[in-house]
Length: 313
Ligand SMILES: NC(=O)c1ccc[n+]([C@@H]2O[C@H](COP(=O)([O-])OP(=O)(O)OC[C@H]3O[C@@H](n4cnc5c(N)ncnc54)[C@H](OP(=O)(O)O)[C@@H]3O)[C@@H](O)[C@H]2O)c1
Image 1 (cartoon, protein in one colour):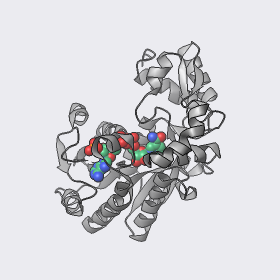
Image 2 (image 1 turned 60 degrees about the vertical axis):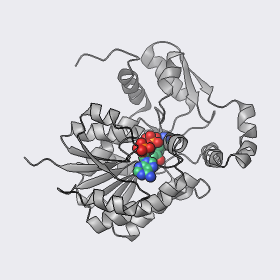
Image 3 (image 1 turned 45 degrees about the vertical axis):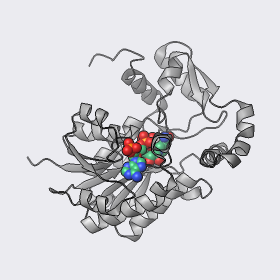
Image 4 (image 1 turned 180 degrees about the horizontal axis):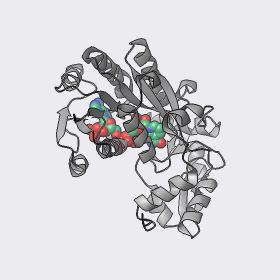
C-alpha cells in the first residue's frame, strides 16, 4: 500500500511534535518542515527521517519545500511567531503570523497542495483586539480567498499549556489558574494533534473549507480542573492564580514599556470578558466524534505525564 505523505510546518514546536506523533501513529510518512536552526532531536527520537528546510519568511524556501517530490497530500501547520518558544530564542514576532502565513498560503496554492490544516484559535473571528488571535482569522480568510482547500481547527486553551508547566505544579498539589473565576474552553493538546492528523488523512473533501471549534465538552474554571485532578489523583489539588493580583493590576502599565506583553494583556482581558468560550460544538462532534470531557482529558494527561500508573489494557 502506498504511504501517505504529510508535511508538518512548525514540526519542532510543542504541538507540532505531537502532530507528528499522531501522524506517525496513523501510518503516515511525515515530512517535517523545519528551519536550519530548528532543534530536530525530538523529531528524530519520534522516528522522523525526512526534513525539508524552509522559513515562513522566505517564500522561495517554502515553494521548494512544498513542491518536494513525491508531493505531500496535506500540509498541517502549527507554526507561530508570537510564542515564547521562538520569540525568546530567535527574535520571531507577529510578522511570522501575518506575512509568513500569507507566504505559506501562496506557496500551498502554487504547489497545488490538496489541503492545508491550520491550527487556529477559538473565537479568533471575534477578537480584533487580540493580535495573535485576529492574525489567525486573517489567515483563515486568506485561505478562503485564495480558494486553497483548508480546515481551520480553532482550539481552546491547551489544558497542558505550551510549556507544559502544569505537571510540575500538579505534583505540588496546585493547578495554575490563568484567569481566576472565569470559565474558558480547553483541550488536551494530544487530542488536537489527533484531530489534525485525522483532518489531514481521513476527512472527506466535503468536510473542508470551514473552521471548527475544538474543545472539551464544557468550559471550565481553574477550580473545576483542579477538582478533576483531585478525583483522578486521589489527593487534593487546588487552583491557584498564575499571576498575583498586584501583577495583573500593573501588567498593562508594564506592557507600555515591553510591547511583546501587549498581546498577553489583550489575551487576559479577552478571557476575563468570557471571550474564550465556543458558541458552536456540533461541527467538532460531526467530524471527530463525542467531545472529550475535562475529567477524561485530565486522566489521560496524568497517565501520559506519569502522575498515575497506566491502566492495564
Ligand atoms: N497554547 C495554547 O493554549 C493554544 C491555544 C490555541 C491554539 N494554539 C496554537 O497552537 C500552535 C502551536 O503552539 P506551540 O506552543 O506548540 O508553538 P511553539 O512550540 O512555540 O512552536 C512554534 C513553531 O513554529 C516554528 N516557527 C516559528 N517561526 C517560524 C518561521 N519563520 N518559519 C518556520 N517555522 C517557524 C518554530 O520553529 P523553531 O523550532 O525553528 O523555532 C516552532 O516549530 C500555535 O499556532 C498557537 O497559536 C495554542
